[in-house]
Every structure is written in C-alpha cells, then in structure tokens.
Length: 487
Image (tube, rainbow, N blue to C red; front, side, top):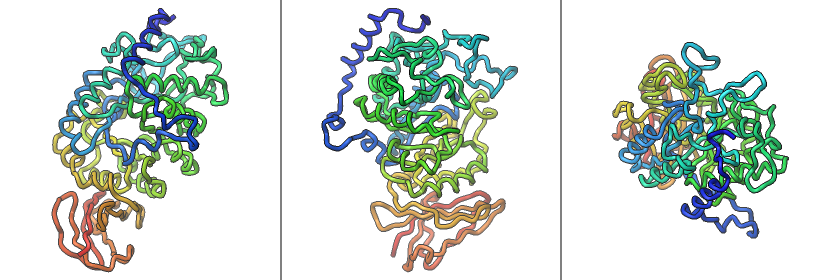
C-alpha cells in the first residue's frame, strides 16, 4: 500500500479510538432519530453572515502550518474583537507540494494548478503524494502541517485556533479521491469498497483529483458520514465544499453532506462553492447549506464587482438567518503570492473608491465577509479602513429588509436596509459610471416623509438634517454608506 497509508490496521484503530476518547466528540441528542421533527445543525450556526479569512486568494493551495498560524495570531490580536472568527485552510491540504510540476516554464492550466498527473494506463504517476488513511479519508500532508503527524490530522491546529478564541475551517472537494477508488479502499463501517460508489465519469471541470459519489449506491452516505466523523474529531467548525454547483448542480452530494454534518455530533457551517449558483435551486440551497456561492471566482476586476450588483439583487429575497447568498472572498491588500493563483503577486488592482464600493455592497447585501488577502503583508491602513469599521460590520450583521431600490447599469445603484435594533435606515449609493457623478436618493422612493439626520458611516461624521432627498458626488466606481436617523 501507499507509504502514506497506515500500514498497520491495529495502529490505525488505536489512533481512532484515542481520538474518540480524548477529543470528547459528543452526540447531540437534539438530532436523535426518535424526535418527532427532523433536526439539523443548519439552524445552530451562522445566525449572522460568517466573518472570516480564507487562504486561497493569497496562498492558492500551498499554505503551510506556520503561515496559517501567523494569520490566526493576527486575526486574534487585531480582528476578533469586531467579530471576525473563521480561519479557513483552502484546498489540496493533503498534498506535500501541490502544483510543483506546473511551473512557469511548463503548465497547462495555470502556474501551480494542482491537477494530478497520470501514467499511460490511467494510474496516478505519483501516488506517494496522496496522504490518506486506511478508510480512504484524506489527511493533512505532514510536510506542510507537521503537527498532523501520527494520524493527528488537523486536531492540533484546530486546538490552536480555538485557544485563540477563533473557529477553524477547511476546504474539501466533492467526491472520493481517484487513488482511493483505484485501490478500492474500504468505507469505514461497511464491507463496501470506494470503487463501488465512485463515478469516474463525474469529475470536476477544473480540478481532476476526485471522482463524484453516486448518492444512490450503498455505502455512499456511509462514506460521507466517515469523513465528517473525522472532521468532527479534529474540531472543524466550517466546511467549504467545492465543485457542488459549477457546470452541474450536485443535489445528491449536497444532501449527503448535510446529513453527514447532522450525524457527526458537531455543528459546522456548510459553505458551498463555486458558483454561479442556479437561482432555480434557491429553496434547496437554503434547506441544506448556510452559505452558497452566487458568483464565479471573484477577483480584483471591475467587471466582477459590477456583475455582483446583478447577482446580489437577484438573491436578496433569500437573505435570512442561517442561510446566506455568498458573493465570494474579498481580494483586498496583498494577493496571489508568488504569482499564484491568479495573476502576478500584487496589491489589489481595485482602486480605493472600488474598495469602498465592494465593502458597502457586500455589507448592505449581507454577504458573508471572507477576506482573501495575506493579512500579514497587507498595508495596515487597508485593514483598518475596510475590515475594522464597526458600523459597516454592524450593517452586515444586524440589518434587515436588505434590497436594491434601483440600478441603472453603468450609471448608478441604490440599496437600502433597516437597522434591527432601532428605527434607523441604512442607505448605500453607488456611482457605476466611468466618471465622477452625483447620485441622488429621493426619499419618496421609500415613503420617507420625515426629516432625517444623515451620518456618513465611512467618514464617521454627521452630514446634517435632510428632507425629501439626499445627493452626493461620488468618484468613478465609488460609493457612500449612510445611516438615516429620524428626527
């Protein structure tokens, strides 16, 4: 067997027993099948849009333990007091050096893309790069995550994150790894092999590591249950499940993951990626996930941000507690380190006005706020301005009736919301044009027939008392965010 697989079954079982005994993963009685109404962890997490950080935009698939812990330290010291809590390791954490053959001089998709290579007979060229246990469950590569040694997995890192008062998340790809299917490795608790549930024809369109799982096959749910049993033993709080909606909508695997979380004994936020999510599946998504990507991969390009207005408007009726349409990560500050995963290493190409636009829109549309930048090398001013404005975060976390009032493409847009804790209103004005322009909000559009003090939330100052309308000149692609206080 692969030299990364537990060679001694007894040792493997002892390790699993040790984890179960020492990590105290408890079964939640509210999920007992004897209850009259089916229960789910879906409604026990994500009361508000999750706030956190994800490694992809800065580190691609190659973040290591030291880099991740440094980011966790930064978040705990500077961001936790304002509610930022999730720290998420993105994809291919089971590989010691993902994309190492996809060099600037020799690549097929992009530099560092972690597709695996095959021999002429279809077998893996480098099976030694697959870190997996005896039940076909991927484990962190110890070369990158040394604390994962001796079968500990991500438990030591999760403990580190929790000790800092934060929550820990990981990325997974839908399905079963090709190597696991090739070797027909056993599914825990069954006499079924992985090849019996794998669908070799069903592969991700942009990453070839996995085969899809046929939800109608015996052992399919047990396979996903075994994964989430492992993640629960590690102390995972957040799962980003990828390739769920791109090209095809995988309703069966979404439901199996939902059931596996509900069976595992530990609440976890379920984030589905990548989009654009089909609006026709909105009800199914809201019933099975806490957040789901409504966009394709979002980068620091104006056309991506401009398109977000259309997407967030379409999904605004589905903004609700525990279930959040997700506009993707925030690519501010330093991203694409070592020219991976998207373009050259750089500070965000978004202009300062465009950064105000993004944060104003994502806040008032109540998208989850997941930062993609390398926090360590990003300018302090960027972090303080855009991620540490308490009132901007309050709009994202504690507003309601969030919706677009009007949008004229390539000209302007207006969004409104209500404060959950007062009679105050929130107003966001956007200049979508290619030149400086005045944007006007007519109070009558919202039947606001009183006088209102208007506070500039970004500038943290009062602009005075207004009746009937409010107008402001905004720079190209710029935005203003305001609180309206009835007088």
